Image 1 (cartoon, one colour):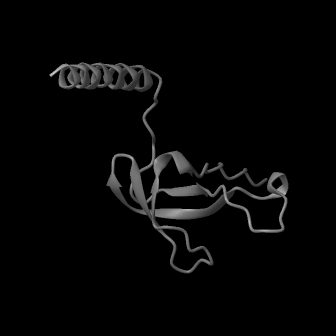
Image 2: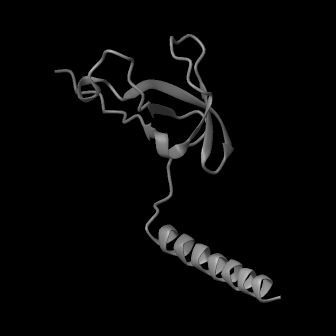
Length: 106
């Protein structure tokens, strides 16, 4: 009986700690601007064997977002590229492509 009471108390404290941590995390998170059809860079942290990590390009692409699978996961369109990453990635691995204005022609 004592073991089951202790286990129940531990589980309750874990739930409280998880909820508190999630609340603190969500306070500092900014909403992302990635949507279906937008162009993004993909962060791939794996480097081919024999290459120096500090000299490797970590941001690959740009890729087009085919669809948003959920609020935090996107399916990328990789047809016609040499890249074969897993097609569904978390938005933390994506960065929007910045479109620079066209300079005026004199």
